[in-house]
Length: 121
Image (cartoon, rainbow, N blue to C red; front, side, top):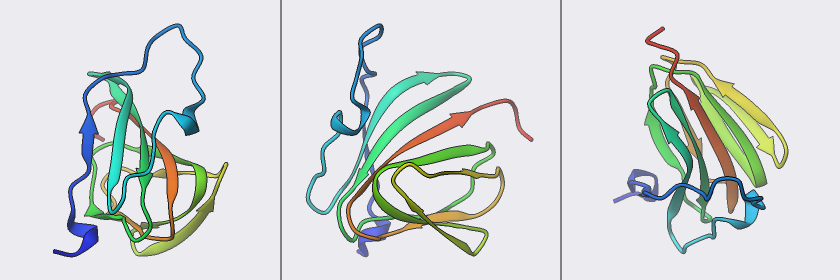
């Protein structure tokens, strides 16, 4: 099985509310893995933080909702509708609903993913 075909393993607990967090430090890298931690999950959307070990990415998918992705450590290649976007720490991009997208491995990195479920668009 190709590394990009591995499924991420989400953690089910949210971050503690009304407490300050250093976002880049709340998730660690795991060898040969993509790790996901939920910051907040609601029926109207969710915010997650993800860490990618070197050589790990996400296979192509399509979402019915816009997704905002922000790199908080390292670099990542976000491919949207076959157009490559190289993002570095501090940069973000909106992945439009209904467009195929995937994340190519580009060394270790961490990112925040925010999905707002405003209805099927």
